[in-house]
Image 1 (cartoon, rainbow, N blue to C red):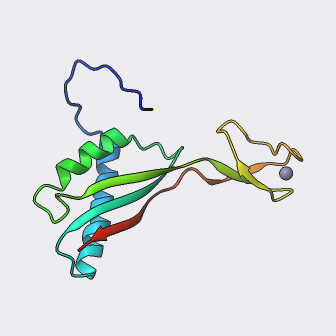
Image 2 (image 1 turned 60 degrees about the vertical axis):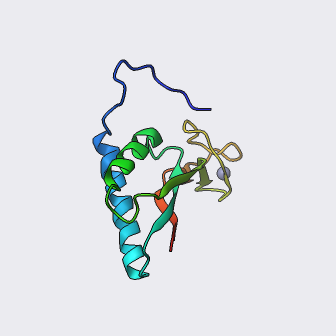
Image 3 (image 1 turned 90 degrees about the vertical axis):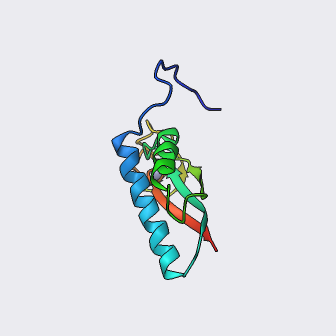
Length: 127
Ligand SMILES: [Zn+2]
């Protein structure tokens, strides 16, 4: 399910934040392609934590404007959302979390987020 905002502007400009991320992603992919003598990048798959703050719609838009004229022009940008999880400082148990969960439900210890904030390239398909 994806909620869309109604907007009187037909196509939003990519936001600076997502543009910077898209540039980083493309840079990584082009470096990998060069290192592997690839002619074409077909797919870039990301891992995006629930709390990474990335707007995928803006990211896709930014990415598609950057890849024009590069070997990644036809590449699909795909991703998995990584749910939030954390580990208790006291009992060491790891569990799924909600953003408002700061204390361990078992022992009341402080929780440390272990997943859910990541934002990285998982793999790149090229040929
Ligand atoms: Zn605990």
